[in-house]
Image 1 (cartoon, one colour):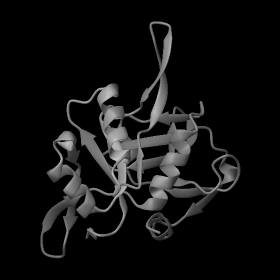
Image 2: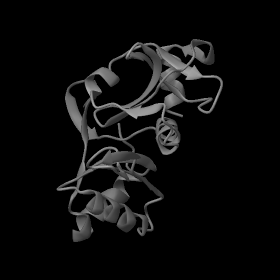
Image 3: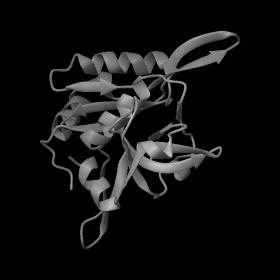
Length: 195
């Protein structure tokens, strides 16, 4: 269950979002004393021979704070009214309820590391059903992404490591040599992910 006083990463939807509104929301959140970090994955897109750096995911901003601080920000300031929680189902032993989705620090650290490099071998995946499907887990042992953990997938016949944030986003490192992977068990992956 969610500890309301622990600093965590929360993916939030920004209602009626545009690039300008998303960036403005990021800047306003960064001015809040109770917010320790924000992140919007960016990518270059070319349209009509014009290349521009834009958010890779249309209406998502990641915010690192406590649930209680986030709740206060959303309730007490009309500026943050467009922010929406993303909920996930949780089984509490008796019944299934829902709680605000949060991302473990180590998983978010890997996601930021991979998506902030803007390398040509990193792509964002639109098909989250495919990206978030269970699969073999591995840790990259050599190269630019040493230490990054993810799910091994084949995309266009290439061996890839996918860093999924369930129901929100997924990034894939393309063309990872098999010799640069150390396969890990699901239990070890969960333990390392939640550190």
